[in-house]
Image (cartoon, rainbow, N blue to C red):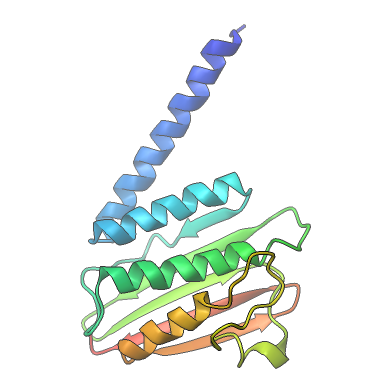
Length: 178
């Protein structure tokens, strides 16, 4: 039988191997270190919160859409994922999930962030991008989605939000002519 120090070492080693494989995978599909690093940190943060954060294995990002850089993508993805984390604050459910997909070809770059959190009331869907608007989050400032919208506008993209209360929310962002 393993003693506590040995078991702790084995758990730490297994976690380290898992982190390494996640890191290698993300750096293969996401060519920007800052964006890959952000995704790694969000996956770790999800584990701390008992939220499963996944990145679609078909995701890819080779370059940024016109007018945007890695700072914009880090801010955009960071705010979308943090918003998804917040969607679970008032929810007591077993399976909490956030799915992230980034797909790109010669013409389009699309980002999809979906959660199975509390959802957004239909009457608030138009308000979520308004500066200062927040709902249902303990520490919400109302600036996250506002900043996301500013970046989408800067990159001449489109953002679509679909949501059902108590089922979850989906943010799809599309930039054309990459």
